[in-house]
Length: 417
Image 1 (cartoon, rainbow, N blue to C red):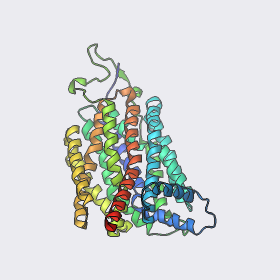
Image 2 (cartoon, helix red, strand yellow):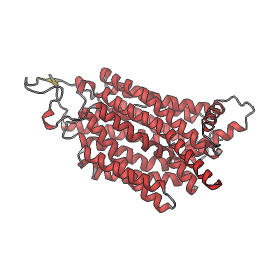
Image 3 (cartoon, rainbow, N blue to C red):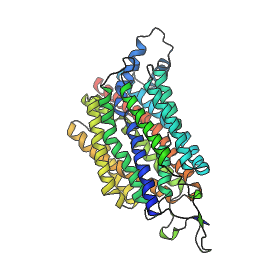
Image 4 (tube, rainbow, N blue to C red):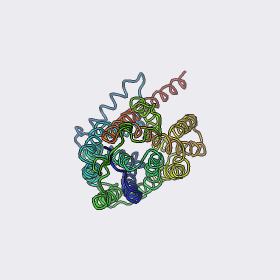
């Protein structure tokens, strides 16, 4: 027995709900990206004025300084904020890597809707803690809760796969990817603008956090009122012919050649290198060109706008493997340009190439991964796939820092010799 496919009208309705809710979620999520340098400097300066030196932040900085001293030469304190930002990004991603397989498996057993609403409850708590974060300890708690509860992206991917057959899967995954691109167009710029509106002296970023919380609350209510269950086992079944291959009813349309091990390893390797650069981008522009939060927000917005155009016009029409190949080549060229960056023009050219990468690689990998998962295990398999990507994202910022610090030491050595 196989589950009946959803009707075209129902599919359109579900995809609309997925798109709107995921867009709200990701805009809220991207608010904080251009704020990290200023935000972490605020907490570091705040802790410096306090009498007690046994705070959470000071203990973290002590551990990070121990890591810095593991290099053969002293590393400038100007990298402290970069290293702290990388550590927090790594913590969030590591928690995501732990939680994603569990969230996916729970959605297979109890339904996508149920799992998503529980995830939203955690997101609400996470952002509420950020609103109230007048000290670093509360802000850290916000990141921990968010890392353990954020399941929107993987569940949206699973739901999109639930309501799409294999001929529709690529364009449907491009729709999910477009949410990322649109969110990066508006989220960072809006977050940076709201950070300039100070409503709470004890937390200069409370306005941005409060607006982020509003978006999450609207998303939660919208999902509760409009999202039906998409789990294939919840739909009526129809008899399948004895000759139909299992577990893929339309497997004759595709030859299966990609194991989950191969796809997960590819996802991990790509995200490992891409995330280090991605997370460090605001720090890089801050260090090289003294970019403000608003300027970083505009640059990220440009990447998002271009990526969203590519998602809608190019990626959705490309075979998944071709999309991945295009994105990897663009990424390599962009990295080469960033490694020799001296002008703002070069920065924007590299950003354009990164937009191509953003619009293609992960979308293609998600599509291929969804092809390899049976209906009854789709949530778990996609959760595992995302988990490996998050492990790469956890290690990427630290890898970037170690590389940057080593280059700085090499440069200092050359100047002395």
